[in-house]
Length: 373
Image (cartoon, rainbow, N blue to C red; front, side):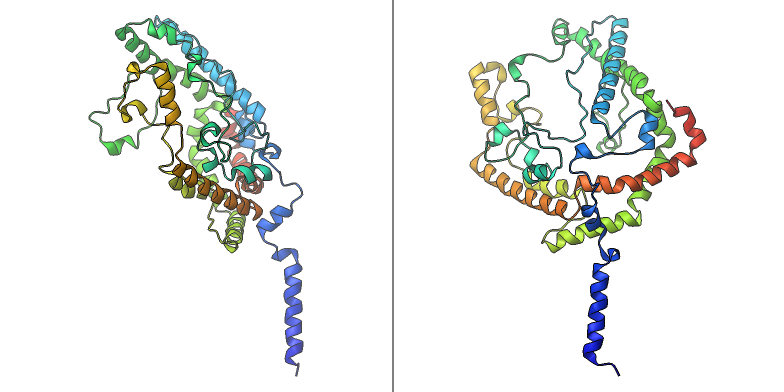
């Protein structure tokens, strides 16, 4: 009969052997040990046969920025021709800079988006990017507003001067030609408004139809033809056992460190309510009405002081914001250290989604041929 100490020794040896094997290493831990894991979104390469079919390279930010800039320029040219045909002057509105970026919140600090240094400073980019840096001061984190245009730089719309020369009736006709007839909300059931589908009209609608609906890879026609299949493909990828295991590993690791984590939507759902009531809502419809003042009766100095006060955080708000930012940065650092976070997840899902995309391409090869560039 074997002695108890010998049996315990054998069990401990087997346990140690299992812990040292690759099979016991969590998926998230293996991801962190992957030498090819990108250290920022700038290093993330996304292979997507669907994006390639549509003429986009989601892994090349410069290419995407140029592609969208070209589409915006083409749309403005269509709008200009359409407006001129209807008897109006119209100067295309061409943006000086592209608007597509692979990672938001690129500031003057030069930190690559979602690098360890970026996460240590900005967390997930929720509370740390809620207010401009000029508003929160040097001891809190905000988004870089140093390059934003000042209000006194004049109108950015090249058609503003022309619009101001029109009578009220002419301006209404101009706007209907540009945007179409606005919907009548007066008799609409509020429940129906949630289900409304945006359908551009007027010259903008014509541009949308020509440039975006009939754009690269068939534009919107592609998604009308394959939208249901693409949605089902995404659902299958999200439910893939490898994805489920990876997310469970990250959640367990974060839980061990005293936090709760269930997915990439957590930061916004968790931190946004904590930011409610901090500072003034810069998106409010009419700050002058809320303050019961008439801007037409205010001097330039009074207007400047009004906006300065509007943009000032109280000491109480600053204290609240500091606490939220500290908590966010701590949680983000833990999540990334556990193999989670937006960058790690996108890298991990890349190969899995590629499998499902290749399957989609093979199953729909004949139907997709007409959408090839």
